[in-house]
Length: 101
Image (cartoon, rainbow, N blue to C red; front, side, top):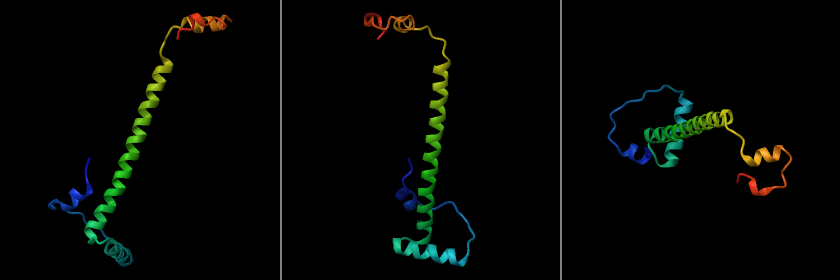
């Protein structure tokens, strides 16, 4: 997994360009200063945190979809009833000796 400290310390070989308003730029500059970071580090670390949140949410949704698909597979499997279930269906639910468990 990527670590923000490693990214901030690594040599910079890629460029991001963005346009914003003077108000937004000054607001970000002040927040960066309060955080003890230059604007680049502040913006990258903030964007990185947000990217991690998005990726984690996507991973959870993807896993949920896989779990749902597996649950449907299990529900659709053609399996024979256990002896215990057959007894229960026949009204022999008092006989626990053949419960199938």
